[in-house]
Image 1 (cartoon, rainbow, N blue to C red):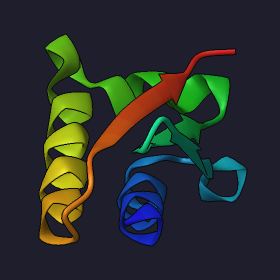
Image 2: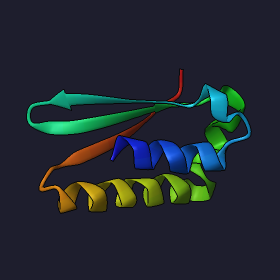
Image 3: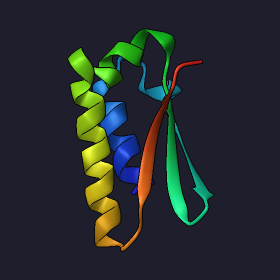
Image 4: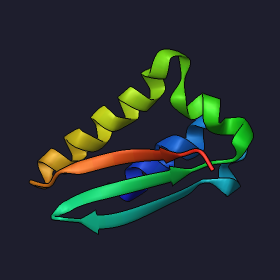
Length: 77
């Protein structure tokens, strides 16, 4: 699941070498944290949050196949 999201995010950004996807387990749920270059943050969020919503839907579908729950967090440091 992490690899899938990392592949999708790297395909969307201008600086794919700065993409970091970290997987953290919290209370039985998986949290995927996405960090990208500051200039690419808008590409990941998308107009009105559409790209972020699509990434979250994709992550949920992949997790459901494995019988897991997942949350996708986009870091804006």
